[in-house]
Amino acid sequence: METVKDTVHHDVVLPADDETPTLSSNALEALKEFLAEQNRAVEEATSAAAEDDVALVSEDWRLSQFWYNRETAETVANEVLNLCRSIDSPAVACIACPTLYAYLKKIDPNVPAQILEYDKRFKQYGSEFTFYDYNLPEDLPSSMKHSYPIIVADPPYLSQECLEKVTKTISFLTRPGQAYLLLLTGEVQSRRASELLGLRPCAFRPDHSSKLGNEFRLFTNYDPGTRLGGWEQA
Image (cartoon, one colour):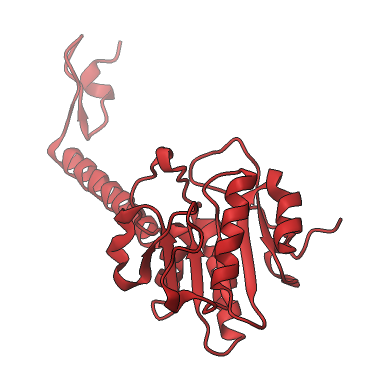
């Protein structure tokens, strides 16, 4: 019969019977290096992901806050920036959509954008923050009246009343002439979005970091062509 000593691997010492196996000093050092390399890889991947994402305050469900996921935020932000490049003196009003504002500023810090929000935690954005209560749709600084050729709105509630009041805000903000409007809201608002604002749904489907029970859509008052998947065919 072969002895334990004759069959052991040169880097592992197996004591007789039921004693716990131990690694040689060379094998232990190699294992430490391997684990350290694995930890570095995980830290680098985590850091890269953090750089791609935008830091936001935590969602407050009491204010019906649900942030877009990164794909949605970047897609809409890039569409807005494309519109900015197509017009003279661009200016963007972001009504109750702080995720979009944050990604706009990440992609292009110089984009002229204003965030209209009820949550005063967003005062961190300084002069580009304006307190906004949809129940008081036109209670805004007079300097903002008819000043925005690009407006993105995400009404906090999926009710007719909320959309009607946000529509008044949009009318207050819209610059005369060519204006681009993007509305992100539940699919249940499709008919109202058409009747109140003349909007049509795009094929692109927005999504949120938190999974919601309601299907959301992106509506525009202009034909995006091949962008955003184009207008959905009736």
